[in-house]
Image 1: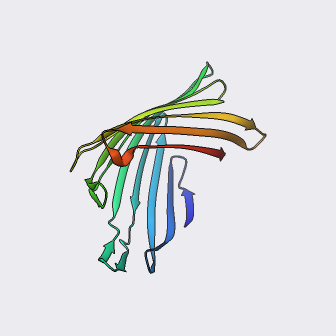
Image 2: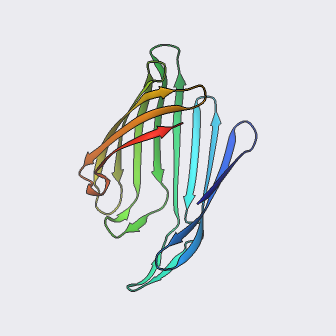
Length: 178
C-alpha cells in the first residue's frame, strides 16, 4: 500500500494507506488514522477497510468488514537509567467476524520501558476478547540496539505471546532499522 501522513498543527497527525488487496480479483481499499498528543497524553484512532471491499470466491462473497480501534497512552521520559516509559490501553470499537476465531472485539493494555540510554527496550502486555469465545493472552518483548549510527539505529526485536486465546499465540524475531 501507499501510506501518507500529515501533521495538522503541533498536536495532531492524520494518515491514510491506500491499499490494493487480492483474493482471486483485485480491489482497492483505504485505511485511515489519527493521533493527537498533548503533554504526556497520546490518543489514537484507526479505521481499516473503509470501502469494505468484496471479493467473489468459489465459496461465495468475501467481504472485508470495516474495523475501528481507539487507544490512549501515557508517555514519560527521564535522564535516569529508565529513559522512557509508556503505559497504553486500546480497544476495538467494532466487532469483527473471522474464520478462525468467530466474533472478536479485543481490549488490550501494555507497558514499555527503554533503559540504558535507549539501548534496551522491554515490553509486556495483555489482551482479551470481549465477545464470542472470551480468550485472553499475555505477551512480552525485548529490543536490543545492535548498531547505532548518526541517523539510523539497528535493533534486534523478539516477542512471545501465549494464553487461552489460541489465535494470538505467536513468537517472532526481527531486525529493525529506525
